[in-house]
Length: 305
Image (tube, rainbow, N blue to C red; front, top):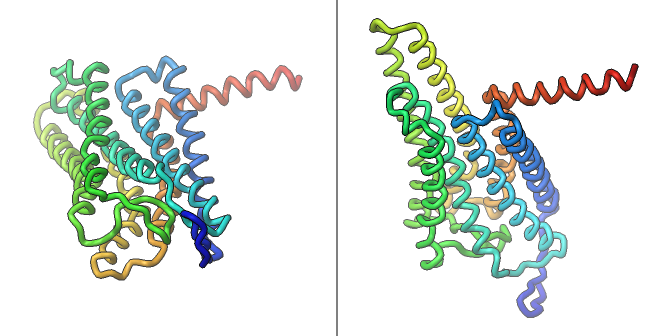
């Protein structure tokens, strides 16, 4: 190694640059598709509903999350390509922003699940189903996600990890790790699971009592949507499993040297699967997309003839 001011020359593993490129490519694809989804929701009047507003919030969270990962990966790629390591002032902010938008993404699924629960269990509470009330909940989740992480900035919880060339919470047996895991992962996942099982029980009770066919079918439809949200969460959990494994390994000081790099490969790939699943499960998006395809095909036929 040779030191030059704040720069340090290093030797890197052969797979690190390809890994950076994979992460950037997946996130760029995710941003493009999420932006396309947002354009459909904004421009298509049939998508101007409260459920689609909540989906738009999920897309916006996905764009923010992917943008943060791209920013970190670009810094990492530059340093890997030049075979140097150095710390810059924006590194801590990117780490802080990444944890915040990760929380927002999970809580966006919570809002969708809660809305479905309200529609079924409290159909007469119309104000709770309005766009105004749901927009307030969306704003609250965004504000909360950025506020609850502020203590990490003042306590130096987010630090520069030399081997991984990014700023993150160091994986070790420390209260800050449990703090972020609790609020960013355990709380939203537990809330969605609780909503799902309560809704399952409620629908079963409805089927055992005298209930109109329309009411029961609507409840079953909303339950199906919550079940799809649970599937989305399971995808994130499965592809985020390496990160969880590395957290447990770090408690015994046995996590791999490049644990964050490995984890972020899986996380960036998870965004692609989330896009596919979100599109498959969101019928208005599929209908609007097919409408665009039909318009395009109808416009091409006269030109060919």
